[in-house]
Amino acid sequence: MAERIVAEGIEASLGTRLLSARLLGGGCIGEVYRAELSDGSVLVAKVDRAGESHLEREAYMLRYLREKSDLPVPAVYHSSKELLLMQFVEGESHFSDRAERHAAELLAGLHGITAKAYGHERDTLIGDLNQPNPPTESWTGFFREHRLLYMAKTAHEAGRMPSGDLERIERLAERLDELIEEPERPSLIHGDVWSGNVLARSGKITAFLDPAIYHADPEMELAFISLFDSFGDTFLQHYEEIRGLRPGFFEMRRDLYNLYPLLVHVYFFGGGYLGSVRNTLSRFGF
Image (cartoon, rainbow, N blue to C red; front, top):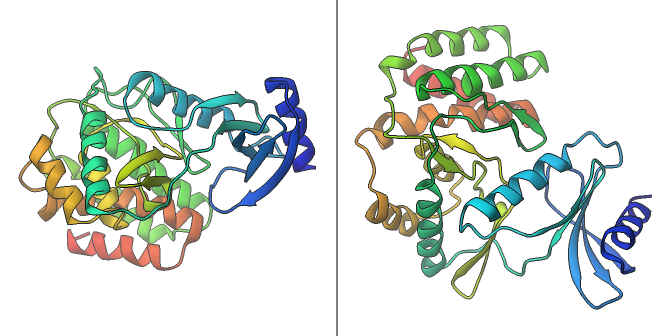
């Protein structure tokens, strides 16, 4: 059935035929295929047979990044509730020092794109979870309500987080003004930079995949990268040369900001991620 959806979508939107579709790994949203076409071209097809994974929202985020930034992301050829067709980009998720420096330059450039408020013009996604983005003047208020509390409650309602842990998150949220500061301005971030979402070839980054965009403290991006060891010291050193880092990032804000991706992972996977959330809460006395 999935191959039929891909074949019909390719013929209707691109006017060519599907020769073969090979299932690829990765991607929270739908099944991902490498599709070879009768005109000799290759593209990536994502299929959501239930029409529930918000492929149109993923297409929006990719198009937004291509239009508003210099971040390399795949071009979108077609999108609907059940099918997303996009550019196939060559590369691997292994990064030389040269590639890490290039990644630092690209993300520093992305973070230089600012907005009047935190959040975004519409809700986006993290994996296949809704990511609410109501425009908010205060970063502390946005992070408290629409990242920390929102995701903790989502994980709790899904049965992945006990009530006691939710209450600890709520107590931390009440004192967030004492723990983080307002950044200079809202910055556009990719939002999901783990190594599997980045491709490189010959010392250059060729694509950032599966974005989870919004306007934030750019340290959210750096914290996420450090949490999952997406890049090494070369990346961070070069990024700091370009944009600098505010005092207190490593000592305080990195771990606080990483509560959000940890809560996302509690929702999806449970297990050890809940232990990591508890360790962070304990570190800050909650």
